[in-house]
Amino acid sequence: MSETVGPFFGTDAELGDERAEIAERNLRILEAVLFASAGPLTLAEIAPHLGQGADVPLLLEQLEARYRGRGVNLVRRGDGWAFRTADDLQFLLRREETESRQLSRAALEVLAIIAYHQPTTRAEVEEVRGVASGGGTFDVLMQTGWVRLRGRRRTPGRPVTYGTTDAFLDHFGLESLADLPGLEELKGAGLLSSRLPPSFQVPLPFDGPLRDDEDPLDDGDAGDAED
Image 1 (tube, rainbow, N blue to C red):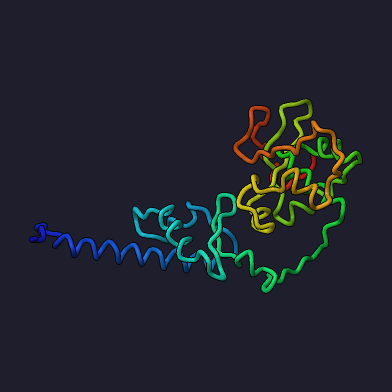
Image 2 (spheres, one colour):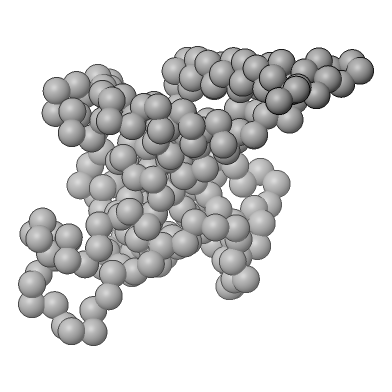
């Protein structure tokens, strides 16, 4: 069988070899960029490092397959991608993290409520906890990078709404909020009573775009954790 030859581009075989070489180079670049990154990278952050027209989702899928079953895996964290220690080896190798401030029990409770009830306001968090939550608690959670301001609720006073971040997912090893422990898992871990009312349901968090009951943040809202 004869090979077709284009007037400028060479034979089909040569074109195929060139495409394979470009794809392999893009995979190597993608691998290097993700290894060098301090945190998960989104498709938009990855694309400028690759050749024009590179199929970033396909390259991520191919790279994920290459690392499947290894000691390090390529994982998705929200909208970002990162290399992380395989789940079954995390007990052998844990990242050393220096926390300038230990999270208090109150901060952990607020974080859990935000994770499950988002988007939520400070008043709504306090209603669930049954006690007032100091503004400093929200400041600490935002300083960790695990909680963010989403928008403002369309209610009197227009309180800010809170949600979690991709850094929260990354720290707790979650691909998305759908991976948060469900009712049976929480019961099994002893975090919920086994004698809960039959009608009890674990809240379904929402981390998409602003909902109909949320307005965009005002100018100057960034970094402001007060309602």
